[in-house]
Image 1 (cartoon, rainbow, N blue to C red):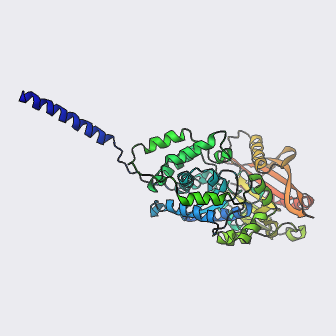
Image 2: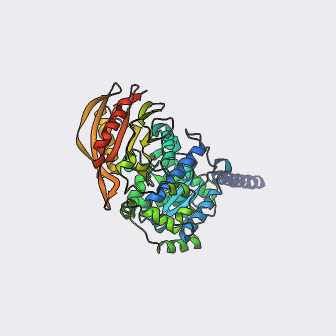
Image 3: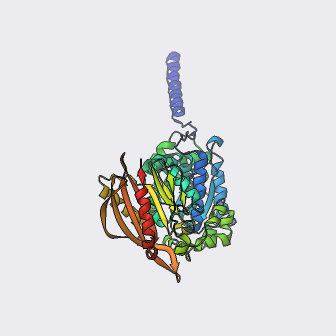
Length: 486
């Protein structure tokens, strides 16, 4: 009997040990670490410089709350809290700013600048959800997603062009299929980028003691029909699919924590946000054309608080009263040599750009406030799967029309030969930044698409107000005739 009793107790003890061991083995014990972001085609200094140049454009194109505003101060405090969990060797000079826009959105620029719409703060149910949005945007910077697009988008050439263009802006018709407006530069993330930003953002949230699921749940909430402003946010941040499930799987083996959900500071900031005058995206776009935000941001102190203030101040001139006499091209031409092409241009004009294949040639008086009224933009044609020169031209015109709704074709494209290569020539009509009696002048744009000897195509967009185009045409034709492609 004693032996049987001992055997029974041994079996019971073994079962207890097995249950205990299995329970211990099933307990999550992993503490996640942030990944190595890798090395893109742009250096860290280049990314920071590009980001600051685009920040200067943001302050011209959008209203921004000054750093002294209580909502800005709260967002900056929350952002700094998240920054502290990033290892120093992988960190960036993050900045956090608030845009008084009603729609839900947020965007990050290379090098660290992050902008949060006030509509996002109003839509967040608690601090953890807002922290999730900020952590997600920080992850795009951390993983250098924009810079990793550099070979495809040829940002290096644009970096040089932006550096010379009076504070870093390019005109509406100078975009050449690359979105340069506030909140759209370098934001064409892939679903893979979005999934990666979710995963890295989850780690940042976890280390800052926020539940990573709050980020995914907030994004999922935006997908619902009742999600106010969701379509704009999701158009910039394509849904990688199954966000909540992906984050749950990611954190399944992480060591449990007592997460923070809300704070009195968030509640107070949300109340303050409700008292801020906010604008719709359309209102912001309309008023940007009149230079209202550049003036307002200077007056409110927002621009002075920005590291990009000096650059922005350099580009706040006006094109309203510029005359042909001020930009009249010289009869003497000088040559520009690029890696991809050579071209001659009027000696009294300037070429903005580095040794890449993207360049802007314009008179100094013909560029201001991020707009080009006179000059030419030369850039590679984006590879949109075009199978012919005609299709590449149509695709590029459609890209231009998306950011310039009033742009239209003037007649059909004509086949020509440029630099011994097949080319298409088409004229476009739009609206010039030049104004007379307070009204914008019509603009004529001459678009030429030239096949490159080694594949692909180059675009040249010659720009001028309608009244001055005929006088400039001989100079533009001389420039085109001098083009040499490599």
